[in-house]
Length: 152
Image 1 (cartoon, rainbow, N blue to C red):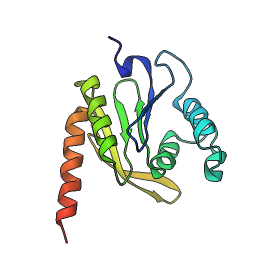
Image 2 (image 1 turned 180 degrees about the horizontal axis):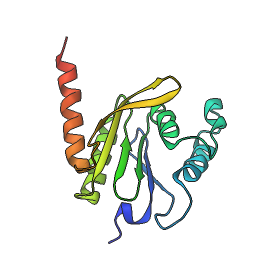
Image 3 (image 1 turned 60 degrees about the vertical axis):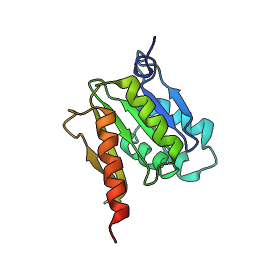
Image 4 (image 1 turned 90 degrees about the vertical axis):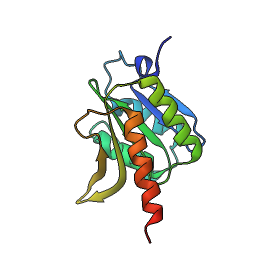
């Protein structure tokens, strides 16, 4: 069985929980090239995204995509980086946990709570040392979200 991370270096999960695999892991193209193609195919009408080019940092592209409600997973070689929007649908949560099952114990950094600071995308990160799995990172993130809802 070929796992998700064996065939794609970038995965986009839309609000319906559908996973779009882009960029073959063995391809020498950078993530940005795959993301530019994805944006052109899916968001050509979004003017802000039309300015993205090969010089745009991948975190900035991820920032824009998660602000449109997508989850973005990037295989960065030795670890994965997943960016989640401020609000996940139940279908996205299910899809991320399915991805976590495929990735098993592969180290992942989960970036959430996006904002722009001095023109740069900033995130709160879980697993910044690349020492936890996606399942562990998601469990921690879901606990944070649950506790956030309990504070008044």
